[in-house]
Length: 255
Image 1 (cartoon, rainbow, N blue to C red):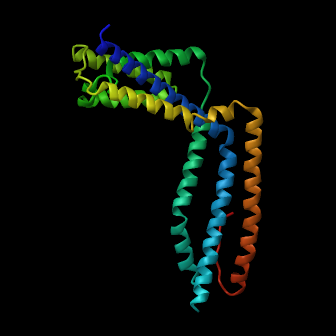
Image 2 (cartoon, helix red, strand yellow; image 1 turned 45 degrees about the horizontal axis):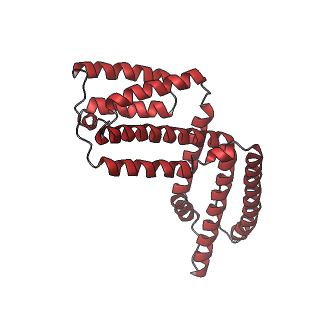
Image 3 (cartoon, rainbow, N blue to C red; image 1 turned 90 degrees about the horizontal axis):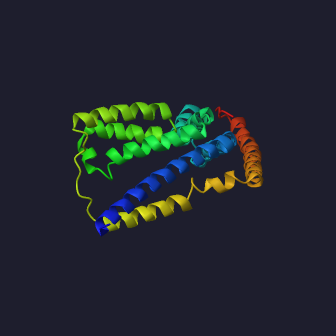
């Protein structure tokens, strides 16, 4: 086997490994959210409630320091703007949690079939192996769908995509225009570094937490304690805000 052929096979092997570990990392993330999502949302919701009340207190105090009247409408508009990014983040957490809770387990046979179909498709049109895929918009769009279905363990969609891809390849004479892969040694090193990073960071590292029932229990207890701390702090902030209400300001907030 020539050095160039050996390098190509190593490059292809690393590509498949990279994609496999990225997929596993996504699965660990979804499992992490299924396990802790509801409690993390409760903590974050209470946290931003405290942030909101602190901003309200700061707004009121600033007006008092300037000997200005507290305009409730102006303050509510200001707070709404200040909290927009936090509320968008909360909405995103809720949405992701709902999606993850809907995930259903699949059989080992389906997992193996997904892997086989993905590898068949990737060997034909993976853009890092067949750069010509990037020049064929319809084929590249299908590849994007393949990656999405692969990460979601969507066997039915993968089966349908393989049929569509094979149809396009037949029209092309069952060939995707290739280009020489330049700097393959550097690309191999970059893939090895990317794989190492995936394996050594979250969400892949969540696996070690999720596989340990004691650590899962302890982390849930930590989140519950954090929630209780924010709840106590929120009550303190509410008491401070009541003083401004007594002074004539009127405002509302959501618990």
